[in-house]
Image (cartoon, rainbow, N blue to C red):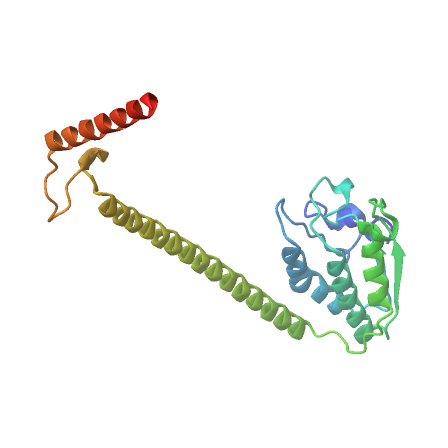
Length: 246
């Protein structure tokens, strides 16, 4: 088969005759645009890749286990979005195909994964662990493309419902906070008006305050008030003088 084993031979521009083959090689190239999500990656595998692998009826499955598409792997420059649970999920799917088509014969060979800082807690170590745990899980059931697709659609629907519920809850909280703030402002204004009434201060148009007499109160006689204050001051002065004389 020669070069037909390599992924680049599956490019659309390459024809079987250019490879010296009588028919197209069993190579499937798939790609994802910038900004894709882990769910997009899973959907592509469920809808395009795994059904083709299953239909090929392999005698043995060889896995090139690379983990450099992890979201924390620095070498992919932010293009990778996968997590260790995604690798574990994909491994489980391949195991089910192996169970159905080739008596569970599957060989995994370690490939990429370059963020090793942190040792056992690194993105590489966590991804490798998820992969090995899936391999060792002893998946019993075989692969069913229709069942896998139905399960994926069910998960998608659940995720959408949860996202919708979260959005509605967030909107309800914003509305409640807004109403609470409005009520608080209204209560504050009412308290201010009550204080103004008690103090006799009335807020006029334009923000000016004026002192108005309460209803039922007598007008103040400022002449008599001044005379009373002068008399009190004179009496105090006279008493002080008498004390000095004594």
